[in-house]
Image (cartoon, rainbow, N blue to C red):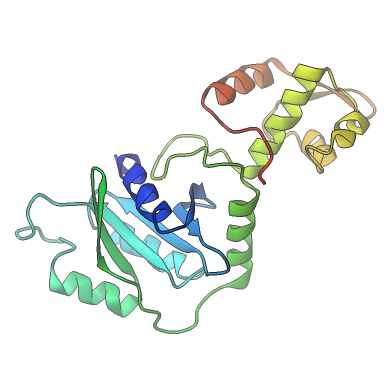
Length: 227
């Protein structure tokens, strides 16, 4: 599974001083370091057109995009091996980096070389905002068919936790905690079906909220606000 590649990539980037988080606005891995542009890594078990298209799409947000695949057992004999010169040349022309991943080891085959300005400021802003707001790294890069713990979901979980643990039910009381500044919008929109309106500006939890709260807490969804 692609998710099996994530721990090695995360450790590799953290050793270089990056703050690494998984599944940020559709990107498998997003790493930031100081004021540098973000670094994005897309994970796949093998090199494919789908991976290449993902990488090209991510170039709209940053020039630092790597395609990471599981390290093949043989360097030759595979149609789309990342060790083939034509594959490397194609990625170089597109401005994409390449790396292979084995248990506990990452090999950088090609660093990305920017070809021309192409960043879309709005997408970049959203990517960095989500990375900054998300507390910890509650996801595993490369997962599929699994709900992603976004910063918004974490904030909704904090609201639910405050309501269950401290018995807070009014919007005023939730806002006064300072834990979730946009509590009003979260409860009123009720994206996840967790909150039910009892009366004006007063809400309760649904059964689904209690089930999801227990599940996400057990999974380490990191409910404390990002620092």
